[in-house]
Length: 297
Image (cartoon, rainbow, N blue to C red; front, side, top):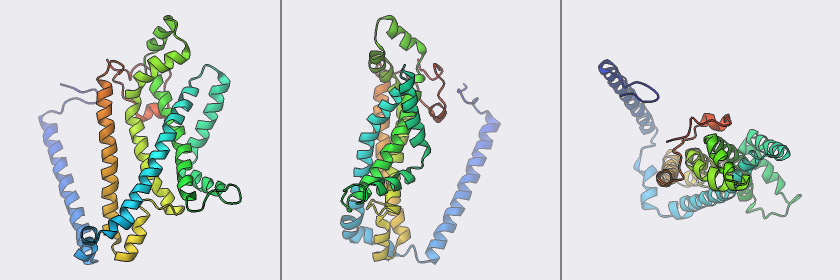
C-alpha cells in the first residue's frame, strides 16, 4: 500500500529506518547525558534549586500563577479581537469591488510585513501620556494586545482567504445558480465548508499569539509568565529550574489548546458542512484562486 507522499518502505528500507532511529536515540541520549552532567557540575541539579516549586507555595501564588493569568488574559483578548477582524479582512480581500480589495490588501500586507515586536513598541509609544491617557500600569498590557491584534489579524485574513479559495469553484457557482447573493454564498456555503480547511492553520496561529505575549514581558515590562523568571531567579537563584518549569507550563497550555482544537476539528469533519480539506502553509502564503485539489471527498 502507498500513501500520497511516498511508497510503503520495503524490508531493506525498514531495517535502514530502524538503524537510523537507533542512531538518533543514542545520539540524543548522549547529548542529554552531557547536558545533565554539565548542569550537575554547575550545581543546577541540586535539590534546593527545584524544591521551592514543591515546598514554597509563594513561588506559585506570587509569581507563576499571576504571570500565567496575565498571559492568558492578553492571549485570549487578542484572539477574541483578531479572529473576527481577520475573518472580516479575509472576506474583504475576496470582495468583488476592486477598491475594497485594494484597501484591505494594503492593510493586510502592511501589518503582516512588520514584526509583531515593532508593533508592540509602536503601540506602547502611542499609549504614552503625551498622546493618549492610558494608565501606566496597564499600558504594557494594551500595547501587547494591540500589537498582537494588528499582526495576527492580517495573518488570519490570509488564512481565511486561502481557506475559501481552497474550495472547489463549483460550490460558489452552484450557490449563484440558485439565486444566492455573494454575502449569502459566503456566509452559508463557503465559510462553513472552509472552516475545517482553515482550522489547523488557525490553531497554529492561536498558539503563536499565546507565545508572543512573552515579547511584551521582555521589552515592555508586561508581567506575563516568562517575565516572572527574573523575579523567581533573583529570590531563589534557580534560573535553569525556573525556565524548565515555565516551559512545562507553556507546553501544558498549548497542548490543551491544540487538543481542544483537534476535538473540534473532528466534530466539524464529521458534519455535512465539512469538505475534509486541510490548509497548509504554502496555501496561506500563496493561495491559488479556484484550486480544488485541497477539497476532500
